[in-house]
Amino acid sequence: MTTDLPAAPVLLVLIALPADAQAALAESHEVIYAPDATRRQHHIAADGARVQTVLTNGTTGLTAAEIDAMPNLSFACALGVGFENMAIEHARARGTVLANGAGTNDDCVADHAFALILATVRKIPQHDRACREGIWRDALPMVPTLTGKRLGILGLGAIGRKIAQRALGFEMQVGYHNRSRRGDSPHTWFESLDALARWCDVFVVATPGGAATKHLVNAGVLAALGPRGYLVNIARGSVVDTAALAAALQAGTIAGAGLDVYESEPAPPAALLGFENVVLTPHIGGRAPEAMNASMQCFLDNARRHAAGQPVSTPI
Image (tube, rainbow, N blue to C red; front, side, top):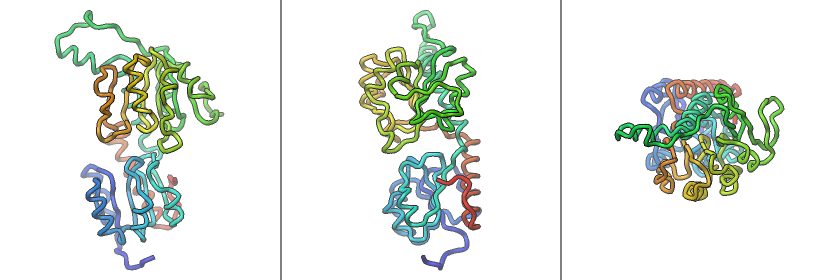
């Protein structure tokens, strides 16, 4: 590896960050800011040989070809918990240390999951519009309450557990599907995804993205959820088959959906925009000042540990 490197590590940032976060990084790094495709391509070509550290996220990722274009890359970090579009095995083969922001935005995502659940089941956006248009409640159909309903969670990881914890405040029954039963969980485990969908009233997707989970929520799962069931996705858009979801909504197969993520992002999901019973947010589940500060501190701590020859605290 080349040894003629500057004292301040050269950090390539591939994701959009607020100004204060960029300033915090600049205190300990020479920052190359490339949050869009044009700047990313330019800086990897022009500055790749100088880059020692990369900050990205699971959606934006880091390709094998990009890793090869950065011969001095020794540390790469995903700001959030996801890392599905990072070439993990290729990076490891090159000796690059990998970390993520596990635990830094779990509460924020779980809060947003419940915001979407309530907005979808109680039709908050639709009622807001009706109120602004002068439509009184007597002209509107009643909507279900959440208390006592059954919540199904696909993926009982750190975020899934926090969603389950919040559900208990609504006196909900909680079930989940993982590849295997969680021995330390008091909630009901369902061996199959279809069985979970048939059981629950609200189905929340909280599983990691990537090839292994692509379109896990398909037409069959949506049919099992049924006409009084609601789908909420705060995980990755790839987990839900968008075409199947649009068909299910069109046919009345399910009651509605709340999505923070979708396959087309950052473009909105065109196939879903015409449905009144769909609530959309632009992948903001993990975004809040508190979560951003925690994620940045996690990255900076990991970067310091790596520079000191110590193991990172949240390895991938």
